[in-house]
Image (cartoon, rainbow, N blue to C red; front, side, top):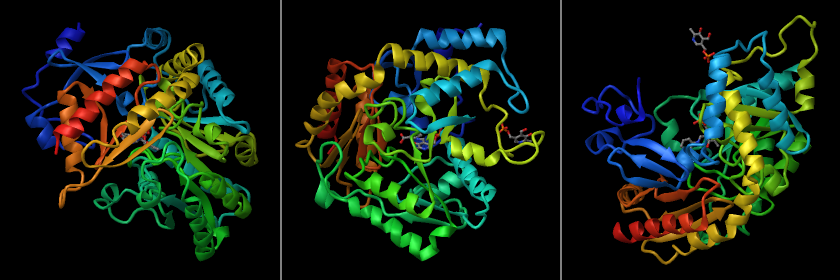
Length: 445
Ligand code: PXG
Ligand code: PLP
């Protein structure tokens, strides 16, 4: 039997067979950072050290690690029914999870399609947008508008609407018919803003110009993250998201919020759309849906979108799209147990109530060396360092390595260090995290 102990001592003489995702793997394989256990807000490293998890894994372990309620639900489901086909068949818990998600989603978003990753959710949302317009006789709506510095996963759709140069430049021509809004990161006017910055609502007006350029009747959807996470936590300027909403509504364009990171309490409410009071036509969810325990994602949409497909003969498939593992029983079991924890422990409210302390700790780093910005909203925040000349991202990476050496795992995004602790974190654990980060910034020159 494979035990935790045997896993911890698995053969690491062969690190070469694995091609690692988004990793500087030659550096990694020289000095591997291996995790073998996790509990609460800590990882256990292979050398036995306890490492604070400042990023909730990859922004997904919102209820903290080692939740028995979740692992037991997964085990029970695996024993009862390991797999069930999701095409032309169903299992009850899938319907239950959809209605539970609808129950916490903003009013009007009441129908859920399941996929397995954020990337799949994004590509699904884009396909639903195209098919929705076509079903309503607007087949000419084929363009998508994304945003610079946006991250929407790595499928061809998500990469194309995404706005991260490094993620695109290796991969050729992308989807046709995609344009991008400007990003809203404005250091000159908004550096060290607390919460939503005051300046930049007018960045949304670029959408009007883009609509004019392409003819708005050719645009299917606009997709943005309410708060871009991967490019270093960029809270939206006050009024910005509402302005995007108004322009989309005016032109009959679907507005998609990619809530893969911002969903499930990250910004002090169930979803960012609730926190900011702006409701999209669809939102993509993943990560916190199952606390990261089993891959799962979804697209939450208004009934009007679903109904638009319910036209042909009743025996015919209405949406020619789906995944072998849509609503996988283990993922659904994990999702239901996760939503129970969020409810029973009031974790979305907890995120909101921890926000002032988190904000203070983040902004306390403003006077550390090389810090050019601090940003925060809810329990997501970032410290941005100036880039070393000719080495963009290297200083941030060095701080990441120093933090890990000092007992803190967190994400570096270029020269920004992003913090997004599990929502169960205590104030004193947040203090420990911030102290390590601040010291690491000072140590790494
Ligand atoms: N949309 C958004 C907004 C995301 O943040 C995805 C889609 C894609 O999800 P999947 O499950 O396909 O990875 C994401 C994922 C980081 C980091 O540290 C962020 C993500 C994934 C891994 C690392 O910035 N976001
Ligand atoms: N490739 C092949 C050969 C398949 O048969 C399938 C699904 O049946 C897929 C890819 C898609 O896999 P998934 O449904 O897990 O996305």
